[in-house]
Image 1 (cartoon, rainbow, N blue to C red):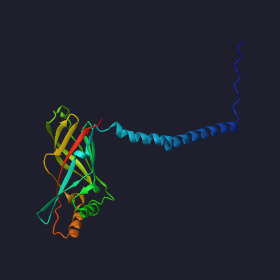
Image 2 (image 1 turned 45 degrees about the vertical axis):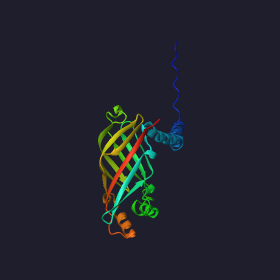
Image 3 (image 1 turned 45 degrees about the horizontal axis):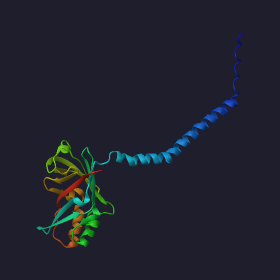
Length: 232
């Protein structure tokens, strides 16, 4: 004959309370371990993921600063024109055509040291706005099939971020394949930047006053030629 196993008597209420307390303590400890993971090792992993995420979207092309130029003109006293440049450019273009160019505003070069310093401080305020950024998406389409020496036109609207302002600029581009691993990008037409749109008019007025000039135009002609090298 099989005798039914006697049922264990219910634990006293104080024992059940200790079980619940232990369970709650374990949950809190588990939560604490999760927090520590997020603020310690977990935070490191998260930071690593954030750092490597751009690498996963790494540029297929990298701007060659030694083979790239960005220049702009100024017109003062009504008819005197001068050409200036930025000497430090960085940038990339991925295989989908997403382009970013970073301009070090402190690298402005006008040929006159004191004027360079005045532009850095009075015009660009490099202490607060050290760089300008240009972002655009260039339709790649058949660019991979472009023969060496051939060019293709691309109608692009770029986004320019400068001294705290961001605005779109229509920028028709010509893309020329220099070699299998190098392309040259330059505007099809001169780009005219309206300085007052980017809150630069006040800085230009300060430059005009300190230089003792009658006028400096707020219409600024800009041109560039940037070379991208396929990343290894």
